[in-house]
Length: 438
Image 1 (tube, rainbow, N blue to C red):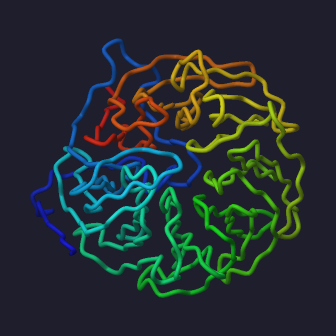
Image 2: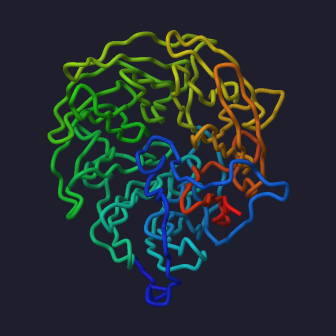
């Protein structure tokens, strides 16, 4: 059953004089993890940043997106079954997936779009993907593969597709987690199935434009668009290889074997200059050099035990020849030299501050001017400086409580959004707007 509730007329919404820098998709406007808004406080005040508002939400790993004065987020309302987290086990639940829209100034709900969605996945605590807002539409991907396009103003359904039915495939064990990418007239997503690991759909109608690649499993990594040597390339990393495609046709430009443990191709490849970096569970990582004259890549080095950084939940950040990322095995934030993967330093202080290994310990990295805004799995916002020389913490504030669980510890595993001089963060109970100015 589908239901869409228009809760408030837009006419009654408070006027917004300036939206500032939006955060309309995963990792921000350019999908690069950089927050470019100016005039934001550069230190955490003694009393902490003030909470502007709080709004009720349900279960979900989906981060919020902010565009045109509205906040969009997905959640899950459990109606039957018990939520239990087992890395190798299936959790069966009945309930509804929802797309929620709030006023970014006040937190007042604007509309809700919901549909019945049974879950049969591991870590069934809600949708994984951050909504993508573009051209007056909102594109969402649910944990069981429902790809939906909604009117951003009203929440009215424009079109939807069940990827598992359309492409005769199965939901990955940890659910569909590949944040939809919209560019030009196309929306790109991972579907799975024969010759359809990646599909490109007309963003207006949902009609298939092309399909490409075959693999036993599609993986979880988001489609990533890069430009190099005068050519746009769509990067698709499935559990067997990293692939570069022509974004208009799906033709494969190049492919490099790269097989993570347990099929966990998760993070999006990161680009700095002529280099690409990708990493995953199982001491799998690689630095690739892109050709300057044609779509082609060569492996510079591959990671080995105790060098490089092996990321999973959290996307690494590349800057000035250094890789910063959360290591899946140690739970530490690690800095590594891009030229050969040598580790420069590591610390668990920003992740969970544990003296013991905490597998998958997570901190999300966002660069702002000369510092980083870090949001960790404990629900803390941290201001820090990261350099090849070390980690320097400038301040921290607890924003919300971790309401999920992983490996016996409480966690909050949803990437925040930074927009309108605020941070928007969520757990499985509330969406919080933290004001980053006086």
